[in-house]
Amino acid sequence: MTEEGSLPERRLRALRSAVVAEVADVNRLLSHVLRGGVLTSAVLVLLALAWAASSGAALPSAPVPLRDLGRELADMTPAGLLVLGLLVLILTPVARVALSVAYFAREKDLTYVLITAVVLANLLLGLTLGLA
Amino acid sequence: MDPGSARSGLDRQGPYPPPPSHLALTAGVELLALAGVSFLAGVAGSFLGIGGGIFLVPFLTLALHLDPRVAVATSLVGVIATSSGAASVYVRDRLTNLRLGMFLEVATTIGAILGALVAIYIDPRALFLVFAVVVLSAAAYMARTGETARDRAYQGATARAAESLRLDSLYFDPEDRGVYRYRVARPVAGFAASAFAGGLSGLLGVGGGFVKVPVMNVLMRVPLKAAIATSNFMIGVTAAASAFLYYAHGFLDPVLAAVVVLGVLGGTVAGTRLMVRTRSQRIRLAFAAVLVVLGVLMGLRAFGVAVVP
Image (cartoon, rainbow over all chains, first blue to last red; front, side):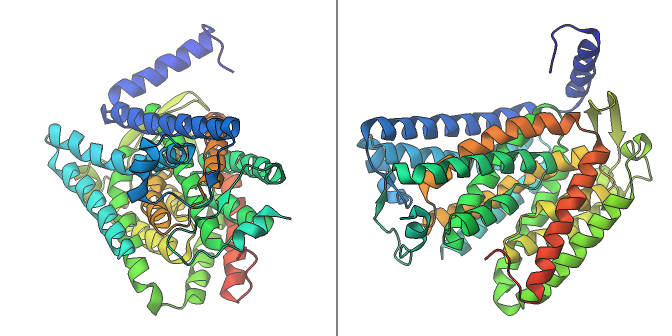
């Protein structure tokens, strides 16, 4: 476990921050996106489960279809909240790729704009083929 | 009445079957067990860079008697939770080689699409055999060889592609408190092998992490911990696309998925801490052991013996 302030731990933190400082800052952006997505999803899911348990409301055994999700959320149902939490989780990696494209575009790193854009395009192509 | 078999008995042909499930007391034990298994899957998945579907799917189908499609949909959500939960830690600590991950994602996503397109023309038994051979030889190699500090700081000749893509990176290893700067070898071969891995996982429904980690570690000379972190980062992307399709087709059970997500996220908190502190050699042996189990299962399937439906 981490002891605050003991010498080896301090050295460990110093070494780690030296590595952290040297690698480009897309790391910080992406770790925030990933953590934000995961935490948002976990909080929504927990709230929905607690809400359903306390109100005795039924939870669905199949997903709320996308077109009904808006209505479920407007009606403030635990099922809508639960499915929203799961969708946030599922879409987090996709958002991560989309934000990488934007990051590299801002940095004018054309090679990686292309690479991340191809990944995004492949994802969307896969979804289109799968839904067809 | 076993609620698991009741669920699997549902007709899921229709777009969105309506029967609601209650958080009934009878289902409590199953859900608790599922949360426990999800926690372990989260630990193992983030520790080995493999997602954890290999632990979730057998439990969902064999113990809870779920329809395999519902099991896969639930497990995919668990894989995304493992990937994003673990990656947020590994990316923050700069253990992940982001450029390498993004470069190889091009290959795995193309492979996944091609795999899905050619699936109907290919005999899956031949594929299972190929997969078993690949995985077992990777296991043998990983068990036989160690990783010295010199291996971690690989400084062989720089490949042209690796240079122009700036794949070379560095990471901090708390195991021996070393900062290791490494070069990435054979980027083109690694790209091809990753496309193959993406195709296989699309065809066989086995997570690509089992092939990605050995491809990066053995073929491309990426230190094991960096390879595991990078694999963890990558698997979420392909799993997200598949999970969304299962969602759209109505196979995702929200209550099961919610339990899996919470269990797995707890598991990744423990698994990522464990991974950075464990000696690479031990992780290597654990990885090889899981590969052997997987290789044997896949080999059996090649001869028509399916242990897990």
